[in-house]
Image (cartoon, rainbow, N blue to C red; front, side):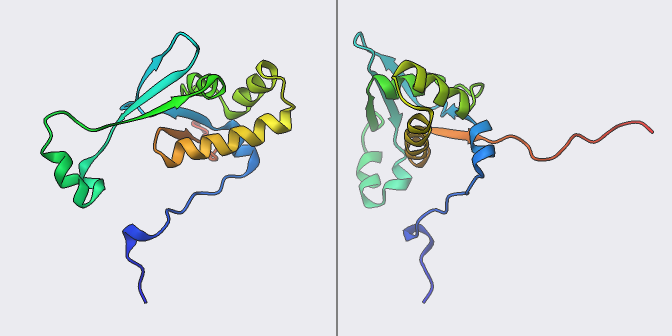
Amino acid sequence: MSRIPWFGKRRQATLSPSVWRRSKPLANASVRSEVLDNGVIVLSVPMDPRAMGMLGWLVRTRKEPLIKRYELDVVGAFVWQKCDGKTTVEGIARGLAESFQLTPAEAEASLKVYLETLTQRRLIALWTPSNSKPKKSGR
């Protein structure tokens, strides 16, 4: 029996721990964020009606786009602000451990689960370091 592609689970690429630690999370450019006074961040994501099946037809008849919102607590906000494409996962984990009194192992384990969730929801992408060495030029 063949599997219908859109009903199957997406396969996650498995990264080695060293590559994962050197990866740099980058926030999706279509996600808008608003920082509230209490340190909470609210993310607003426009939803694609084409990915909503029959419900998408109803959404397309609306004049304003459908927006999904996520509320991040202080810890989530800390991580979100570090998803700039410059800070490595290792650097974020170190900052979490220092700022929230966690052991390095606790910070890394929690961060891994959280970044996987953000990636599955397409709020971030993980830029991984290149494994290829630069070619030498000249003779």
